[in-house]
Image (cartoon, rainbow, N blue to C red; front, side):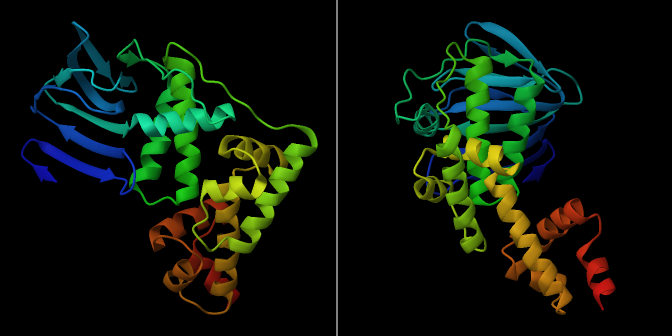
Length: 278
């Protein structure tokens, strides 16, 4: 949505409290309000000022804003040129599930509390940016879950009053879990495999499976799934399918997404590869 005051793009999950927004505002002023979610924002350009917890705060480019559920705040530009920012709203039930999974026993313990409304931490900025991009730009379910877990754990570890508990596998249990997930992806890489499916096949938590897979195979499960899809697409291109048809047949959400990852993996575009093959 665009108007004289800037533009806004919004995304929301259809099944759980998980939403994301990207916006550029010039003179929009937020009235005092709160969310029933945890809300984490990144200021991309300019600066925004807001009142929260009885004090004024300013978030400049690269800084992270952290709001607890039901925490009242307002907001407006801190400079004449306005500000651009991204924000992710994560429901308490999603945070609780993520922390409980990482703990290995389904119990999240006490919920995280963020006492600083503005955080200067490049690691958190990067984690939030990657999650936001995955949510709004059509990444698969598996990649979204991996990035959601990584972001929630990083935020709780580096910005909350209490660090999360984590329980990973080791030794033969780690190797066995990774191999079982690897075999499932080999069989079903064209399907929308979820993190829950992989964890069930491996007999462990989603977090433990992710750590085991990376340790054994050097990449995340979602990266391996995408690699298998790229290999299938290469075969289809070599047999004469157009890049658009190859992308759809190999499980990519759209051709732009396919082109971007093909070039990142192989250094050339699908069109160049196909012309060389013929």
